[in-house]
Image (cartoon, rainbow, N blue to C red):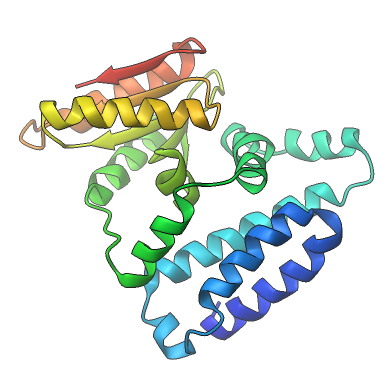
Length: 230
């Protein structure tokens, strides 16, 4: 989808959502005001902004499809057709974001637009995700989850229990503060359990270890637990 189409689609979704979910319309209008005066060429040159906009358009389209169904039973039936990670996102986290005041939203929108945003652990996260899939697990990624909810990946394994995971390579000293901030963020969003993984890039086996820990805890970590693994 080109930048022009993205802007048009955003406008269309604002109109659709105004009668179906006014809170979503407000969120989309805020995003639209953020990008509407940016020239198409400039917007095209900002790949992270475009990727975020495409995700929001996709998620909003699916959410409006669910919300448009005439009964709660039909809405639940639609969610039941999804994978566990999709269901957790569209049935829980995405509507939470729609209806909440996101204190980080203003900050990370600026970073995305200015080019300050960088995914320092992106290659590692991709490797983890690939390994998860190779072991018949599944994962979900969203900019909103990453930047507002301190969640790099949502992972499910055999028991179909989505688990929010943050991955970092910071030092032990910084890791403790980051863990504290991460736990507070998950509590803020009422995410019931999570895994904070701090890795040493010099350890050649760390991806295998991380995936083992992620898949196991997806199945067995109890609610109310926020586990740190380093």
